[in-house]
Amino acid sequence: MALKHSIDRGILRISGEIDLSNAEELVGAIQAAARDGQEVQLDLSGVTFIDSSGLHAIRRAASSANCGPVVLIDVPSRIVRIIEIVGLSRTPSVRLRSRVDG
Image (cartoon, rainbow, N blue to C red; front, top):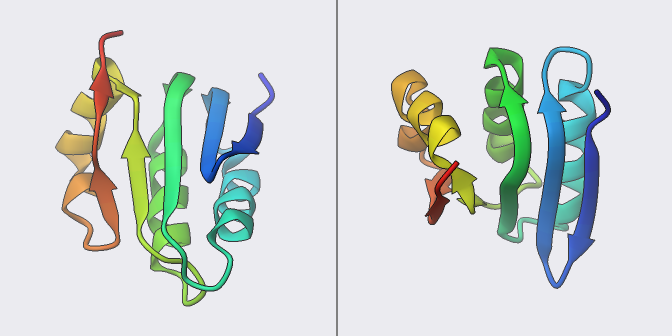
């Protein structure tokens, strides 16, 4: 499934599946939204699946020199659990701000 992303009022909305096939696209979308160290709000409410390569892509983008903090918003609870298990939420440049059921 293709990764879809759009920027609306400073929020990068991601939908679809995030896996090895599109992890680099996700890194590029986050870095493009960052614009000189600005915070990026990453809306994951439309994400139906994410694997370790997707989680690593978020961590890598958030840790890059030109990117400010990445704030994960509207994260489905099934994905929050994965984020917490792998420790992504403990990465200094990644914050988990809000969650949704799902």
